[in-house]
Length: 173
Image (cartoon, rainbow, N blue to C red; front, top):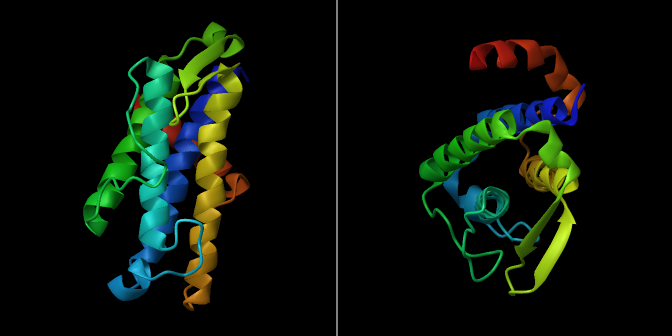
């Protein structure tokens, strides 16, 4: 498997995991969905909103079209349903991105500016994986909050996605 193949697998997994998460979140009422439940970004909504922001931020950096924000908790979408749609659309953008990046690009560095303006240079491949790892990290926080509210957390481990990989790839063609 090439790194480009792995990046596409992770982009497909990213969307699949969000789909599982949102299936379970549908049972959560708005009060608990917006409640401060002790997460780094406080509520489930704010945590998901942060994930949308960071996905946009990194994809902009990697595509040479910076996505300007003042902070990592800058609100993106206050409406619950529109946030879900925006996250799933951003996942589709990552899938398209992963399909378009040539293998040799993964062996290069990316120079970008952090939110505070500091210039950074880091390995491109590792930053692509960071995006998907970051999503996994915060989706885990959301599932912890969900179980605290008595909901069943969805199974989102990569190993549970892999049997679906071939069908997801076929659907792209």
